[in-house]
Image 1 (tube, rainbow, N blue to C red):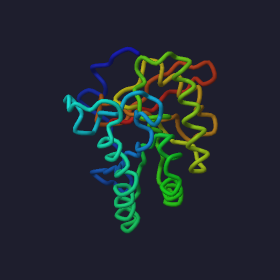
Image 2 (image 1 turned 180 degrees about the horizontal axis):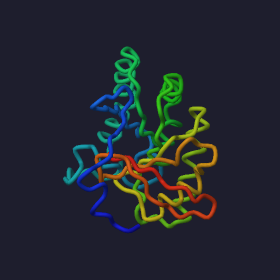
Image 3 (image 1 turned 135 degrees about the vertical axis):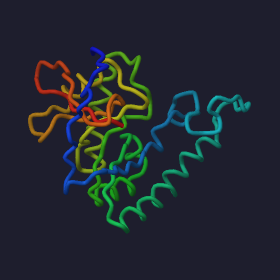
Image 4 (image 1 turned 90 degrees about the horizontal axis):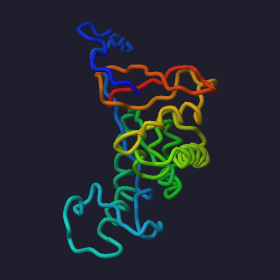
Length: 215
């Protein structure tokens, strides 16, 4: 992918928000619990991201029960607290959801489906895509889409990798998700602009662009 340092330049287009709104606010809930690295999942390591272990050696060897319980709290308590708030005020929400997290928490998956919230896949598990062999990444994308559909009854409308996509991610998303039955191309966040923009992801089956949303 060629880097672009110019973008829209000095005269960016008008965002055209509904109702001529001047500001658009997007509420996002990360739903990752149950998909993180852990000994019970056979990873041989405990997830350190978003815990007190990050960047520190706390002398934990083997299972990190504190880290595991922090993620469990998010699924058991944190999600439902946010669910009550957003459903009470009838506010739309986008879920950045890992497929295995939906599988680990069927009541939450059912609540998300019933609330008619948008689902943006956060991956099959909460793992990084850069460095994955192309075949493995393709398999993870396909597995995530299938599992999210099984657990919520609908396919994700976009994709947000943990930290960053690989150089193959956008092309694989077009190939796996397709765009033929969709009102717009698959969406994936990048950080290069205030406004959404389109890039071209080369794919034999689909020549349409790939819509990127600034995050």
